[in-house]
Image (cartoon, rainbow, N blue to C red; front, side, top):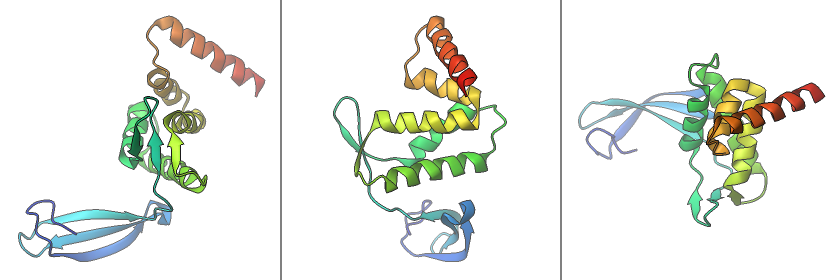
Length: 154
C-alpha cells in the first residue's frame, strides 16, 4: 500500500480488525519512510459494476459517491454514520448479487430511494428532490401528495 503522505511503497500493517459489522477489515498502517500513520479499509467485492448513465456513458460504480449522496440526504437528521454505512453496504451487496455487471443509474437511484424511505422520510424527500430534479415548490407538493397517499395505503 502506497503512503498517502510521501508516496513510498513500503508501509507496514500495525493493526487489523473487523469493521462495518464484519463487511470490511480496518487496517492501521505506518510508513517506513516518513513515519506517518493512516487507516485503510478492505472490502469484499463480488463483481465489478458498471453504471449506465442516462446519457449513454458507462462509468465504474463508485461506492464513495453513493455514500456521499446518502450522507447529504441525511445531513442534520437523526441517522448515525453506522446506519448510513450499513445502508451503503446493503445497496452495494444488492447490486453485486443481481447478476448484472451493467446497471442503469435510474435503477440505482430507485434502490436508494426505496432504502431511504424506510430509513428516514425527510432524507427520502431530500434525495428524491435531487434525483427527480424538482424545480418548483409544486414538484415537492405533488411528490408529498404521492407519499401521503402511498403511506395511507400501507
